[in-house]
Every structure is written in structure tokens, then in C-alpha cells.
Length: 256
Ligand code: PGA
Picture 1 (tube, protein in one colour):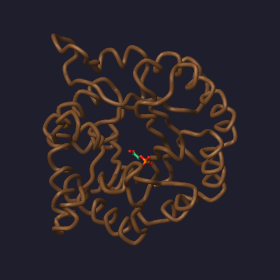
Picture 2: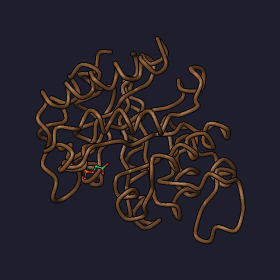
Picture 3: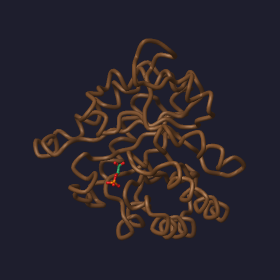
């Protein structure tokens, strides 16, 4: 795979003003990146202004969630039509916080994946086992089930537009513990095999990003692992200076 993806989900941080300042700096950084596909996932209120700011840049913009219906009586939701209208390239689906706090299931994520593809957006499908599943040695079974259901009904042709983010729930956020590199490599290898089982050789074309407490100390090690085709970063990318260091280093080291 010759692209290395690096992106950040801002979660519920950054006002429009804060996000604009950050994005103007990121644009300058992006001009110097030749080996990286860079994306940011702002909150819904910032999407239009951040999209405008990044016109004519190499930065892809995505939304953090959406409904699967194109319109309807779903108060508080945002539709694929609406995201398509404002030129979104990516939509993040099934982040563990959405699963945990808003009861998202693999089945609802599957409907969203199909809707995103219909509107020409790349679904970034987040999967990951929680600490209990890991303790019970059912990480791989859990991840396989998530892949099977979230990607159900997709053709090999469609699936090449999908990206996967493997984010172990126990590694995410303030209380998370960064995963060992060897574990990440083992799981990414497993996911690659599973994708090939499901989609034959097209399974090789699906980028698998790693996320969960990626930081300035560990990003380089993760980036070099087999079948890690990108990094999905939260806190360590929210500060533009910290993200600058990560991006510059990766750009000079990424090789694929
Ligand atoms: P983190 O968040 O890097 O702050 O752990 C990662 C994520 O939730 O995607």
C-alpha cells in the first residue's frame, strides 16, 4: 500500500475560532508533506468553515458521525445528504465513544457505511475490543464480528473506498494504556487476513489505521509496523505544535 494516512478526530473540542487557527497552521505544514494523506475530523459546527479554509490544500475533511437516512424525523441528527452538500470526503463511523454513550451497534454502523458510500464519502470504520474482551481472550473474535457486521453487504468494488481504524477501547483517552507494538502488529495482521477472507485480494487495498493513546513517544514505532497503514490520533494531535512534530517526522520516515 503506497499511502500512509494520518488524521485526528477533534471529538468535542475546539470552537470555530480555535479550529480555524489550528487549520491555518496545519495548511502550512501540509504543503511540505509529500508522503502522507492528512485528514481532520472537526465537530459539526466547524465543518463548513474548516472546509472553506482547506480548499486548494491537500487536507481531507471528515465528520464525526451521521445518520443513515438521507432525511427524516430524526431530531439532532445529520444526514449523508447534508455532509455531501458541504463537500465532506470522509465520515468517521462507530467510534467507541459513540458505541459506549450513544448505543451504536455494528448493525447501525453497517447502515451508515452503506449510506456514506452511496454519497461518495469514505467511511472510516472504528473497531476495537474492550478490556473485558481482551482479558477473556476474545479480542480477535470480537474484532472479526465487528468487521463482518459493519462491512456486511459491501462488494469488493465498494470496499476499496473504506478505511478501518483499529482502536482498542482500553487504549483510548486519558485513562487509556498505550498498546504494546507487538500486540498492535499481531492484531493488524489478523485484521488484514480477515479482510482478505471477506473480500479476496481487494482486502489488501483497505487501509488499517491504528489509534488509541498514540503520542510523541510511540507514534514512530507504531508507524513502522507491518499492516499499519496510518495513525488516527486524538489528544497528541490537538496541539498543533505536537502534531507538527509527528507529521514532519513521519513524512521523512514513511517509505511505503
Ligand atoms: P487518543 O484518542 O489518541 O486521545 O487516545 C484516540 C481516539 O479516540 O481516536
